[in-house]
Structures are given as C-alpha cells and as structure tokens.
Length: 298
Image 1 (spheres, helix red, strand yellow):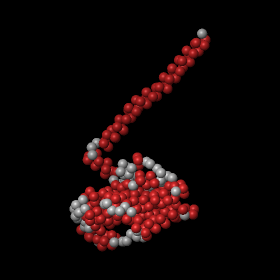
Image 2 (cartoon, rainbow, N blue to C red):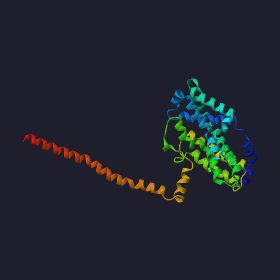
Image 3 (cartoon, rainbow, N blue to C red):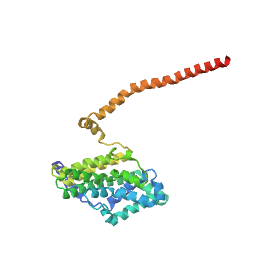
Image 4 (cartoon, rainbow, N blue to C red):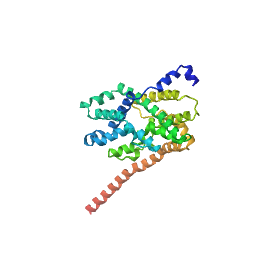
C-alpha cells in the first residue's frame, strides 16, 4: 500500500474501482463471450436449426458465473435474469454475431486490434466480479474462507466450469473437456485471484480492495491481451507450477518425464522387433512359395 501511495496510484486505483461496468464494459464482456461461443464446432449450424438452444447457450456464456454463484450460495439461480437491460443487451449481441448480414458485425469485432480492446475490457469485468462475489459470500459467511474462495472462483470462471452443461445444450457430450481437469489460464487466474481477494477481505493481506482490484486487473489485462495477440494457449503460471507442483504433490511430473526419457529405448526395442517381423514374414512367404513350387513340380 505504501508503495502504491508513493507512486501516486492510490487515487487512480480508487477511481478505477468505481468505474461503472454497464453498459460499456458489460457490452465488451458479452461480445467476447459470444465470439468464443461461435468458435465452437457446430455453433453456427445450431443457431440456424435451433435458435432457442443457441440463445440459451449464449446466455449461459454471458451469465453462467452468476448462475453458478447463486447456486453455491443457495439463492435463486434465475435471479439475475430479472436484469432486463443486461439480458436485452446480451441478446442483441448474440443476434448480431450470428445473424448480421454478411457477418459484418462478427468481422468487425473479430478484427484483432478491436478484439484486443474488448478482451482487455472483459478482464476488467472478470476481476470486478471476483471481488464482488467474495464480498457477497463474506456477507453470508464471515469465517467461511473456502466458501468465499469458491464463490469468487466461479464468479471469475463460471462459464468455463459450466462448459459441459453448455455442450449438452448444443447436443454435444465431451466429458474429457472438463475445465477442472484441464484448467485454462483464466480459470487458474480466477482461482488465484479469489485467494488473494479472500485474504484481503479477511484482513490477512494489508492492501486496500481498490488497490488490489487495480493491480490484479492490470495483470489480467496484460496476460490475456498478450495471449490473444500471439494466439497462445499457454499459461504464465506454467513455469512456476512446473517447479512447485512436483515438490508439493509428489513426483508425478518427474515420473512422466522419466517415463518419456526411458520410453525411447524400450520403444526402440519394440520397433526393432516390429521391424524384424516383415523380413521374417517375407522369408516365410518365400519359403512357402518354394515349397508350393516344389509340390507343383512333383
């Protein structure tokens, strides 16, 4: 906090945390979310054949985090749909992305410089949702650290965690794509961010909420914009996890590399045996053909 104040960022962080999200930032969030929906295989065909199912998928992409958080806290999961302005705005974005003539709207928002702006604004919404979710959970469970972390996590990455449900709405079932089994960068970052905001909410992290929102938003925006611009699916946490996970959770990673390193000689031995089979087969065939010729000659 002293460092941020020394850099004269305290007032900036406070002003930034008070910027309203609706409609500009929410619009960006809806655009990027529904763009990712259109990237899914069969999503365009679904919108033509079953527009209601496509609309439901789009609403799940836009509001899935609210639905999952309400489910965790025992509140009505349909409560957020009372916000008619957000529903109408998200529905308009869905219609323009899927049904605009000549795909003009989709091509405009997917133009990389424009898309990067929307991606950056979406991360602003993500971080704010994590902070609000933890504050809301803390209001109900003052000492429920795990509840606060879980609520903040699903607020930041609820759409990804509900990916299997969204696939079912599209008539697809791919349990191997479970987000918990294969966490993407936003899901991991939302979990780490939820831990940080929980520590701040319970006063174990001596930083103001506005400062934490500002710093974590800058981190998320920088990482996500860079990953989107470079079309990368890697995570900035991979290097750190590569060192920490084998220490904390055993030698699972090391054993995988051990298996890979020692797999070559065994694979080579098997390859040699398989390589010898065709030659042996040719010898047996040639020997069999010679016997047949001998019988014919007899």
